[in-house]
Image 1: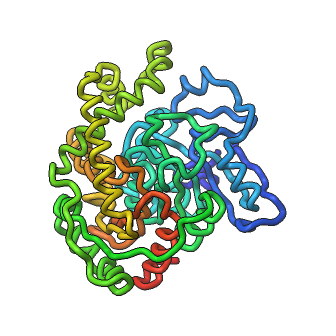
Image 2: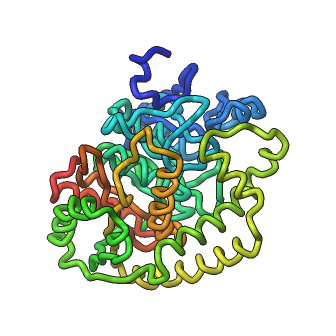
Image 3: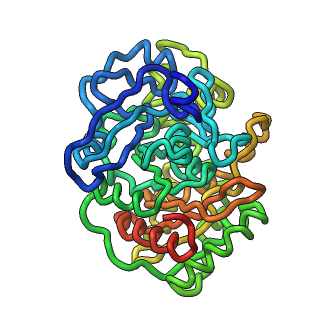
Amino acid sequence: MTDSDNPFGAFVPGPRAERPGAASGPLLGLSFAVKDLFDVAGTVTTYGHPVWAETHGPAVATAPVVLACLQAGARLIGKTITMELAYGLTGENTWQGTPINPAAPDRFPGGSSAGSAAAVAGRLCDFALGSDTGGSVRIPASYCGVFGIRPSWGAVSLAGAAPLAPSYDTCGWFAADAEVLRRVGEVLLPAGGEGPLGPLLRPTEPWENADPDVAAALQPAMLAAERLLGAALAVAVAPEGLAVFEAHFRASQAEEVWASLGGWVSRHEPAFGPGVADRFAAARVMDPARAAAGRAFRRQVAARLRGLLGGGAVMAYPTSPCPAPRRDSSQEALQTVRVRTIGVTAIAGFAGLPEVTIPAARVGGAPVGLSLVAAPGRDRALLALAAALAQEAGLGG
């Protein structure tokens, strides 16, 4: 594949998995790409690693979520690069190449849905499917300056998708336009969940966790949200501290990762790139007591957040505490960003909440996103609010 065919390195090397869409439907005329952990019949799902590709044959069926897009009239143009086994937030892939961030080429695109975010940010397709376990749609959307959604847990089928941590895994998607993001939701989300949202809540901890220049840059978008929903109410959602959120998320996620993938890793002993190898090594020896404590903490936080949002309230806060790290950052620096970031992404993750990130500002020339978060099942209302906010703030579609 030539550079002109794949200018940002977003697509999996080799022949493209292309499929025509139906002749009619609500997504007619749109093109899309698919993260390479979703099956497309007749192609090998590489899951970002050559050994996975070598040990798995061509898919015998196409994942239902991909079929739904095709049946709605959208045209599939290819499969996109994921981090190895979807276990990371930078977008690095030692084997297939790290996609370029079209919005900030000297910075990482974010992961693990790196290729899907890059394809949309580079205007190679109208929307792209990804997966989000600990931030793998939200963070690359923020880093690449596009819209992204992590839906309510369980709202969109993950049949025909390779697992990471199933009680956290979700199927999300990216778009450069808020209206396209909403249109895809009309096809993929279950019926219901429309209606007004409010009041607007401003959680203290994610704002304090953000770099000061990020928090300042997002204020115009927050003011636009207040024009739509009224003055924001300050609330504490993580009084234990976001570092505690991150530690419990990491432990409970690692237990599931090893349960899902540990057998394959143990049989084949594949080499992994920087960071990914460390995470799998930690998952292999995760203390069951620590994982159990993480699961118990998750239940406590989920009850707290669902109670807070159950009446229709919506939270708004920085998607990521900082812009995308530079591609020459050390592993130590990247780990620091990861810990700060997971503490925030765990908020929605623990409670299975829908979260939409909008490209709200730039800091040092790099995009940063503002997240809107609502109660489980309010995905359609959240997408409508994101579209209204984008229009009010002049943020794209």
